[in-house]
Length: 269
Image (cartoon, rainbow, N blue to C red; front, side, top):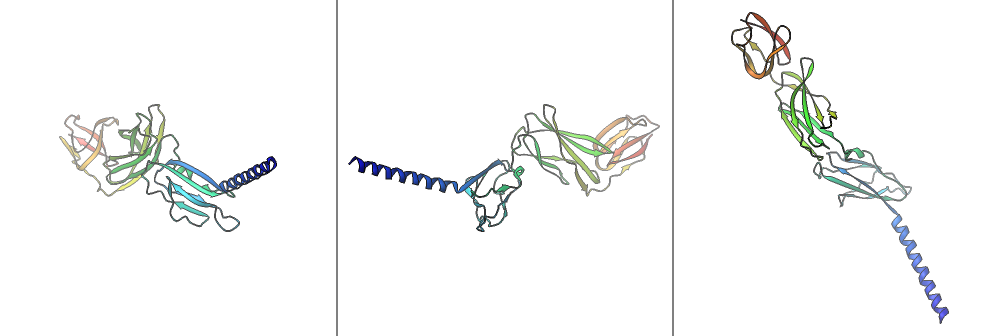
């Protein structure tokens, strides 16, 4: 009786061990690669190696816990993410054969680097537009424009102090011809991040001023940023208008006027 019982227990133990062994093999057949980050407007590209039997490494993709539709049978494919809002957290899980390792070709597309980044920059006839991520508390943007062979400060814009995606629009008054701008993001610690230079060719007509001999008012053909300089190059008047009141200027002298990215001269009676 005892012998029969031991035989039965031994058989059950062997069966249990066999079941565990089989389960372990089944579980190990699939690997997982998990990539997380923040959606910034770009898709992911994946290298998907071919196996010896002609199938491909990846057999399933989850995007924020939802199945990717129509998984391509290809050695490389694109994971479209445009259904996700910019700035939202994203998790991509690649289920793959244990005999291979897939690869994300552009992980920086969603990688949250934990520091400030200019994501998108654009300049139109209406003004500047930009998107950022990773802003620090109390950071600010300095807008610079290229005028008269120098980069000059145009405006300081307070940042939104949000680590997620932030959007900005700043209206500018372009001069005729090619305009150049750049942005500086300045953290409260003093650390500075510089944007690339943005160029825009304005469709605006060239501005003219009149008269050449001024008694009281100097006029422009349209509103424009201007500087009036004396004979020593000192700025004596500045503004953004289509007229300049010159009554305070000393008479009997020549003055220079910077406007529309050019410099000309007039005489004050």
